[in-house]
Length: 362
Image (cartoon, rainbow, N blue to C red):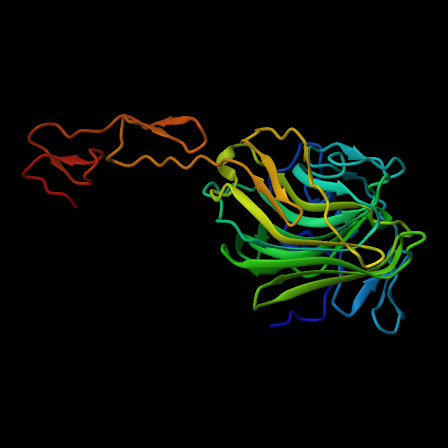
């Protein structure tokens, strides 16, 4: 199934932005304005978040043109609003900053192996978080330019709000042309689905390392796909990212998925000459708080695993007053048991509602 080919510029009312992007929520750093959106590259004003269709692309000046005819469709002005990183720190556009100051990364597996024209991977959508309380979670591979780190192309799986409530979605992103961020439509996806994503450059120069055209695709195996097309920003994309985990508003470890890991498999990378390369992926750790045992492991160039620990202990009437392992190396002590007094009836079976005959349970 293909997604629709008509999209909208996200520069409308707050309510419409929430519906269109699915990434607006209540909890945010204190100094981030209430209408700002959390994206895979930080907090942006809604007018600075642009949605493109499959027949559209960003040109080298950041304007939206027809993918085939190259005719101007929308002139996009430079974003005139400040943007913020995940912790609410303002990002100064004239002073490019490497991660994590331009985003909310927890951990990444990355490599410098020269200018690239292609990266792709498969990964599986993890289980829904048990504690759903406004968190936003992003998983993706991608490519960036070094040393500026001022743009990133990325096929993204996100836990965010779309339609009526929190869910997993996929979308393809490009940040941060003209200090804004742009993406393809968000498509719902369920836990357990297999995803495939790529960043693919064409018309590449082996001399400069720059590719003139790029496409980012995120897809569900045997299902929907969502693509984003853009011209180059005249920079070689020489920082390859096999796996990145980014999160917003995670205050407790059980706000992560109880799956406790996402593995990016079949990771494939090619340089601008079209030659396959085998990077040695290096962990980049950004000291998340809470730490939640966030980590990275890569046994080969084609496999990269992001891991964390979400406590999974559940107290029941059968485990009251017991101390249980939480699955993260710690324990949870269940609350005290309730008991009905002798001669009374335990209506709920857990001592929380007792009646004395001749009264009966409702």
